[in-house]
Length: 114
Length: 113
Image (tube, rainbow over all chains, first blue to last red; front, top):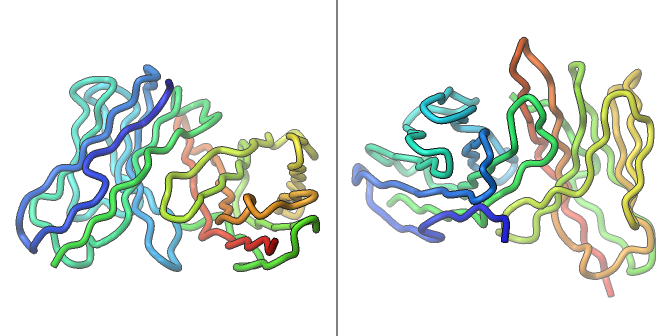
């Protein structure tokens, strides 16, 4: 089954404790991205990757890091989480960036930073 | 930056009625897409309409695009309780060799049984 998976689905952590949210897709997609969703603000793109070893900032990259060492995986790293990073996070992928026919979304990771 | 702006922000209708949702955007686009999100879950792609298309259908969905007015509408006919969800428009705007998908803030649709 074609899908995007994220782990963990729920996470409660404390300020400053490094965490990683994993994202994996099984569709051989080149393009992957991370979004955060906040009430009243909709979805905002954090980082995206056009292919292996190619990443770039989205609209709200501050406080986040990503890596793309393999085509299927695109982890989101919070080196020192802060309460304003409490949010619902989505990973998404599409075949290529130039032809964003459809973005496939993961189920989401709900993060609470205390 | 937010490009697509949906209207209304919330819509409540009776089962069987039609639901119309609108999206306006600011810059030229390659295509416009509509997504649905059930509460707390990932977004699901519904339909894509290209900039050179004016209308598209998929089952009970009808999407129109007016590039002169920079607006799109999503019509769900004969709504069902299961259509209760948030709906987002997303615009795909090209910048050089790259294209960027930008989501609006969403419309909350409630369909009363």
